Structure formats: C-alpha cells, structure tokens
Image 1 (cartoon, one colour):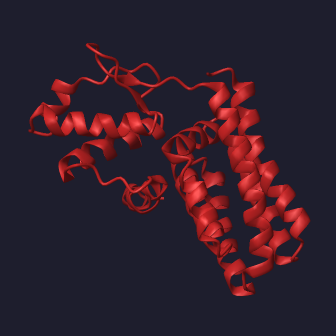
Image 2 (cartoon, helix red, strand yellow):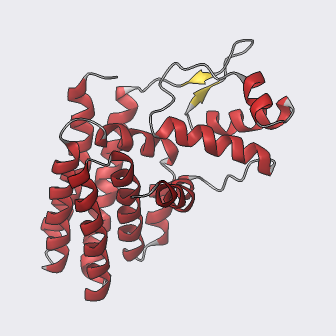
Length: 234
C-alpha cells in the first residue's frame, strides 16, 4: 500500500469516529488531525509531552489554534491538559480498554446479525473484496495498511446493517477505539490471526449463518483485547 493510499484512508475513515467535531477553526482541526493520527498510530506514545510553543512555530500560528486542537484531543481522551503544566498523551488504561472492547464486541455481534438479515449477496461480495486486501496487507506485514483497511472493512460492514443508530453508537466510542485497535494489531502475530478471523466472518455471511457470524464477530473483537492484555505493554 502506498503512503498516498494510507493518507487517503486516514482522511476518509479515521474521523468518521468523531462526534461531529470540526474544530473552532480549520487550522485548529489540521493540528488536531495531525496529532490524533500520530497518537492513534503509536508515533506519540503515552506520556509524551506536547509542546504548544513548538506546535505554534511549526504551523506558523498563534497559541490559540493550538489550544483549540488540544481541547479537541482532550475531549477524545487522547491528551491530558493539566493546569499550569505541559499537556501530554494520555496513558492507556486497561479498564477502559476492556470496557470499550466489551461494548464493541456486543455491538458488532448485532451488526453481524443484521448483515446476514439485510445485506445482498453483492454487498457481501464487497466485504470479501476488503478481506482480500487485508490478506495482502497481512502477508506483507503492513500494520498501518492493515489497520486502515480494517477500519474500512468494519465501516462498510456497519453500513450494511442498515441501522443508523447502531452506527452512531459505534462512532461514539471515538478515537480511543482506533488507538486501541492499532495497538492490538501492531502486536506480534496479530495480523495473521485477525485476517483468518475476518475470512471466517465473511464466510459466515455468505452462508447466511447469523449465530456463527455474530459469534465470530464478537470473538474477533475480544481477541484484540486479550492480545493487549497479554502483551503487558500498558
């Protein structure tokens, strides 16, 4: 996957997780987007201090758009802004990881039941197309490409549920959800396990087996949580 392709997916998919945020100015949102992407992809690690003056210089702006961006990041729980101290990337809390993954597992179990009930054969074939791209990414060991295509697969899958409220509930989990997903997929051996689970899921859809699809979907999500838990990295 090319760098340009990754960037296109970032723009199209990552901020679908936001709850209607545009920022108070376009420059503030640009700063927010760059920092959020770096945190989600693990380039800015927990505890990393965010230097507001340095950001203002980099973007040739005053401190005001930087403060606006930091407030958006704080709302997404990606950054902590303590009084009279430098902001820093928030730690990864295992209780929050567990709770988000438990919610995601239940919601995607419902998504899978609705996909079986409502998606056409052609739409399920579309998911198989995403699956083939995931398999290619996994074979190359391309964590970033796999992550963004995985977001695309899950977004496409949720749209096939034809339940707008369910999609809004998933989006309400915000960018922390993506941060944890990227962390999980970056762990050793995760790509191959994940792509095999996605193949089982698509096959269950094609067979119109709702109980199996829901079970595989929940298992797929919770396997990601267990990988983070076992890693001892948080």
